Image 1 (tube, one colour):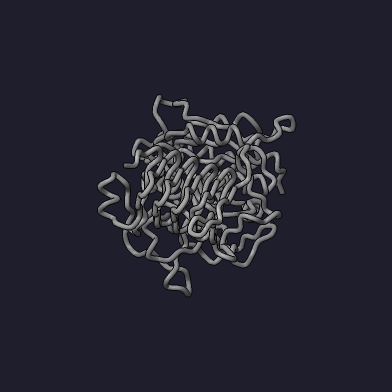
Image 2: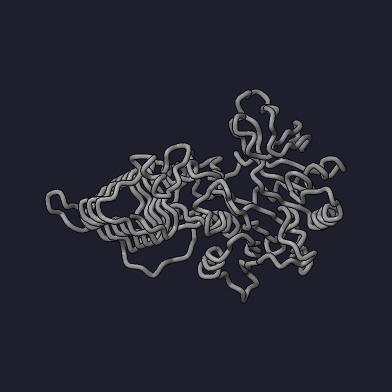
Length: 413
């Protein structure tokens, strides 16, 4: 089959994440906090480590400082037995340009593949929320003797324009691939409401990957992208490209609700909803499973604290996630996700909101359906999330779904 130490993981983590702005104003999308304690990139890293793969390269580019700090501080594997999570910044190795596409990002770092003798190369995105036992996809790849295997998931057909859409034959071999189609694509057989979308996760035979990258690099008309160029080219030249059905993937400790769970969190509304979904009694994404641990950088902070019980001055958290170092001091939170070092002061109320690191909510303030990025102090008697026009006048972003975002480090009057 294969040896785990002969598998290289290359994680594309240089994405700008424009649709998630302003959360990506000062950071790459994979570095955006999620679920209180985590960053988005933690999920793909945990997938590889929990699957037994410990040779991981993280390719960065766009505003990578916070991502670099998070990985260097929180992801130290055992180098003495040749385990690593290495950061690979854009080095302009080929022609002095930044990465021109996902395929060019790998091509510019092709030495990472050739420096060792690998049996398989996994090229995964770093900006999705999901759990996956990657061994099962790799086993499928080996059984099919595939040049390339792509993981795919069924999505509502009306969302097809946001993804690379896949058509397969009865043997799940790729027969057509359309990147972000502008017209309604072919539906899944037997279900007119669903189509098959690429998850942006690929497993290659190393020699085939290198061959295709070199050909693509010579093509001056190419966008140097896996979805737009590499996959169609491999389909046209008869390469063995197979599709792995992610809905069949299982992992240790999986719940019924978790099977097939995968979120792109591509915009503010989907990001907010994915965080809110964590608060369910049986969430689609279980953060608490000891069988599939979710590692991240551990803050050296004291436990969360809830104080005051004096008539209206009560420190209460209802249906919420509260991280280390938080103090709920005489205020109430309901349906909230709090990152470390958040302080909620007396007589304030925060509902259905995400508060990132080092946020302080002043006394008597009212916050509703908001995302407050890190290092923001909300003055006393402030209302956010109740009047769209008022929020816009303050320079806040308001999403299509009505979620108000207070940017990182904002000065709130």
